Each structure stands twice: as C-alpha cells, then as structure tokens.
Amino acid sequence: MSAAELVQRLLREPLRGSHPYGAPQLAVPVRLNTNENSYPLPEPLIEAMAEQLVGVLAELNRYPDRDALALRADLAGYLGHGLTPAGVWAANGSNEVQQQLLQAFAGPGRRALGFVPAYSMHPLLAVGTGTEWVPGSRAEDFGLTAAAAVAQVRTHQPDVVLLCSPNNPTGTALPLDVIRAVLAAAPGLVVVDEAYAEFARPGTPSALTLLPRYPQLVVTRTMSKAFALAGARLGYLAADPAVVDAVQLVRLPYHLATPTQVIARAALAQAKRLLDTVGVIKQQRDRIVVELRELGLTVADSDANFVLFQVPGQGSRDQVGCWQALLDRGVLVRDVGLAGWLRVTAGTPTETDAFLTAIRAVTAQVTGLARG
Ligand code: PMP
Image 1 (cartoon, rainbow, N blue to C red):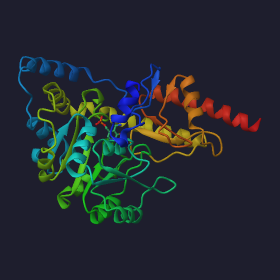
Image 2 (image 1 turned 120 degrees about the vertical axis):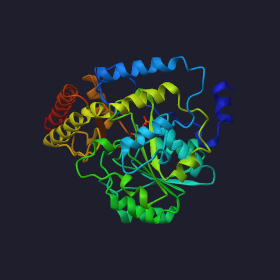
Image 3 (image 1 turned 45 degrees about the horizontal axis):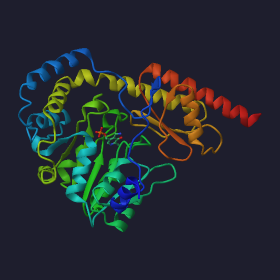
Image 4 (image 1 turned 45 degrees about the vertical axis):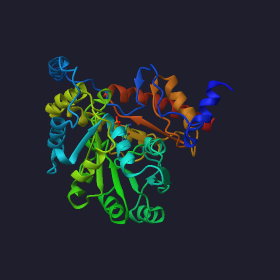
C-alpha cells in the first residue's frame, strides 16, 4: 500500500478524497479571482507600520497579548454601534473566527445550515470541525426570502446558521427582515458573515444594528477586503460579550501574533485614508454590472467588490470554456462551480478595462459562432 493510500485510510471519513480550498494562484497580468483589494497600501501607512513593527521586534521573545485587548478596542471603535472590546474578538482571518465559532457552538453531533451558493469555506469549516453540514437552498435567481429561510431553519433545527451578506459568490446583501426572521426561528447561534460589508450599496444596513436585541447573533468581519490587508490575516467578530467569552474556550493561547496585532492597529489608526479605495472599487463594480448588462449578459446585483455574471451564449452552462477564454486574454476570474456563471473581482479602472475588453471579445466570438 502506498503512503498516499495509507493516509487516505487513516483520514477521518468525511475528509477522504476531498480537495483543499484554494483558487489558482497564477502569474497572470490581471488577477480578479480572489476578491482582494487591488490597491497597495498607502505610503504613510506603510511607514507607520514599519515604525511600529520595529518597536515590537525586541519583544518577540515574549508571547503576544493573549486577549488582544488594544486591538479589540480599536476594532470596537471602528465598528461603532456602541460596541466595547468585550463584545469584539479577533483572529487570523474571519475564517479562523468562524472555525472557532463552529468549534464552540457546533461540532460532532451538531448541525450547521447555510444557504447555497454561499461562501465555499462554510461547508469546509463544518466538515473540519466535525459538524454536520446542511446545504440549504435559494431561489433560482439566488434570492432568499424570510419565509424560505425560516422554513428550512424549522425543518433542520440547526445549532448554527451561517448567513452571508453581502453574499459570496452572488454579491447581493440580505434584507434585514430575512436576518430578523432567521433569528426569531433559529434554535441556536446565527452568524452573519459580513466580509464585504464596506462595499454595500447605500441604504444597506449592517446586521450590527440587530446585536443589542439578539444575544444569539454574531457578525463576522475581515480586514482582508476593504482594508486591503489580505496578507496580514485579520478577521474579527462582534457579538454579545458572553459569546466572546465562550470562544475563549476553544481559541489557541496566543493565537494572534504580535506583528499581526500591530499591523492591524496601524491600519485602523488610518482607516479613513485606507478606506478611500472602497469608493473607487464600488464605481468599478457598478461599471462592470452596467457594461455586462449592456452586453446582454445576466448579472446578479452586487453589494460587494465582485460581480457574478452568466457567461455569453444563450443558456450556456460552459463557464469553464469562458474562464479559459478570458485567461487566454490575460484575465483571471473565478469559476465558483456554478454552471454557466463566473465571478469577477472589481479592482482598478485599468483592470476593469482589461476585463471588459476580454469579455467583449469572448462574447463577440460566441454570438458570432451562434450566428455563423
Ligand atoms: N467570508 C467571506 C464571504 C469571504 O469571501 C472570505 C474571503 N474570501 C472570508 C470570509 C474569509 O476572509 P479572511 O479569512 O481573509 O478574513
């Protein structure tokens, strides 16, 4: 028996034969496949980070602040909504925050419900924590009504419900009445993944506004997107302080490195300057939506820094062919495994130009072929 076969036999049953999460990291001129912020950090922020990092290097013989209290105070200040450090928790990316939530509130013998298509890490985090994953459904147009969500919650009685708003990969935010209805029906924790909240269209309220009324609600956020800090790995949650206390039971001691805490705090101190790129990215997002619709493609409404669109060709389900055709033109987008759909990140105006030029060419070719 080969080592690979042996390892497969020793693996936990739900992990056998499965593949790790990860989009291709290809060296392509235009990379619009992982919803990163295309803008590098502003120079004054880089300088502040460098200075503060140097300040802590001599202390790296010591463990970091285990409770990350100063960082949590800064995050609470950024979020507002009357939050205090006791109601905020941080970890290495919101992926880790969500993993901790599942470790504490789900796990073996328990069940988590999400409404797919949604963030593809949610089921993987469930499997990784030994949680039963229930893939709930959405309408044909990816919408989710309060009635449909509540019916599924009642049927499955999940220990944790994972909502994603704005939703990845569709881009659309959930109306608050859907979240309220789920909170009223759910027997357990309700997590709202707001990784893309800063990009929402005007008038889209955050689930943070519901926190005072619902102690079973958790809102997760990240500095990987709007804050352009994907490489720093900083995610966080806001919830009742009792939820934050519960998460302490499963977090690893000293999980958040001193440099990570310092970098995140430096970024929060310059949040206004850093978030300047959000406006530009939203413009590019809206431009992509409008121009793809002008091309005749079906496009989901987006409150995020990406757009989900149906590939050219009447009723085409061949997103793989379109993905490859765009890649051949130097543009990398994301195949999220939805037949006939692709997701593109909104970045700089130049990146949008490149993507739109490529998709126009692909569309012309497909419709030309259909006519010819
Ligand atoms: N939630 C959603 C919906 C995401 O799209 C992502 C990143 N792709 C994350 C959470 C995780 O982000 P991070 O771990 O970088 O905070």
